Image (cartoon, rainbow over all chains, first blue to last red; front, top):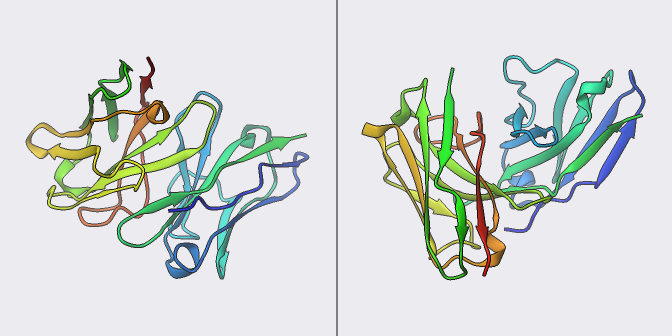
Length: 110
Length: 121
């Protein structure tokens, strides 16, 4: 159950796009279409932003999108807004009814 | 609206025990797998344990296997986490979260507000 690998931080100006990559293995990201992404503002509870690799739950702005290629998943925020500044965590099913998170990425809006 | 409310956190000595509870409302509780996720202070998220809707199967992270026990009482719309042989590294905010369906976790949505467990001498 090794953690998925995410960059510590990414940044962008308002209106720009940023992409967060989440690297795993064939035993987690590469083996299942069960990747999800969570947004967490400081002192707040995590919120589901993307599930099943690409699905956006009701209420999540369409500027958030997810994808996967091989053992790497990604979250793209298009048209970056000030309220998008937060920590983002990827998560994947890792087989045998276990789940693994990434270490988190801090998104800064310049 | 689904609401989850954790309780039972507190300060405990290494080797001690604690039982966390998560009270659910706004859903047919037995229709959903439930999960505990923790977050150490200033750190990332860690999956701890999940249980399917009827309580018949439980799953644990290696870091807690043999020390923690997840359970649920569907008649009380409640989820529990019995934590024994606690270690300093178990110090974290513990969140409960709802899964996709009775037999599938697949995602964590929504999350409760969390309860803080501090293990210290």
